[in-house]
Length: 200
Image (cartoon, rainbow, N blue to C red; front, side):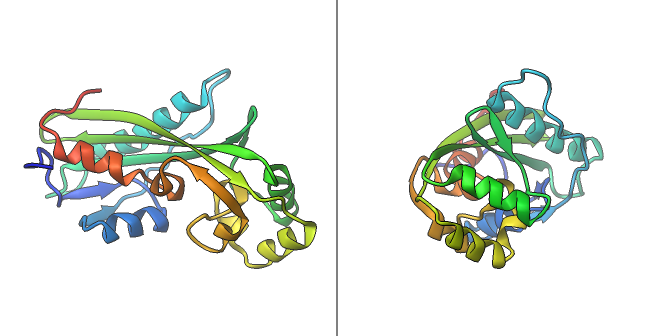
């Protein structure tokens, strides 16, 4: 990759996601976490891709506005949105909603939008982008859905499934970036960290 313009240490992840933090740690990045409490409501008629980027940037910008943390000039904001047709599936509120989500996804292909914003507060550089992947579910029986809900995973994840955990049993195929579906596109992030200049 060559010499990185952004330090591989001194990074703040503006997210509570344990999955994202684990991905970054396993990739060799030293990351601190600072959660940004923002309004994540979607604007009227806002395209999903722009929505994911806007929220990711708002998270990073809020932490950067606090001054980040000493020795951590790089802020990463990420937002993952699961969409099927015109419907966005967030974290289900209860088991009944989780069942409806999984029934809706059963046997169909949905899209996972992973918006990412990286702010280098030291140099004033900003990078914003979105990764779009497709996930096809197997045809799920009610018994299979009930089993998965019994694991407790569906209530913790957008779209009611975690592809990196037991939820992988529901997936027939993916078209795109696996780490992006889990929580953050590592290939895209490392390209950002390894190039000389960021562009918005």
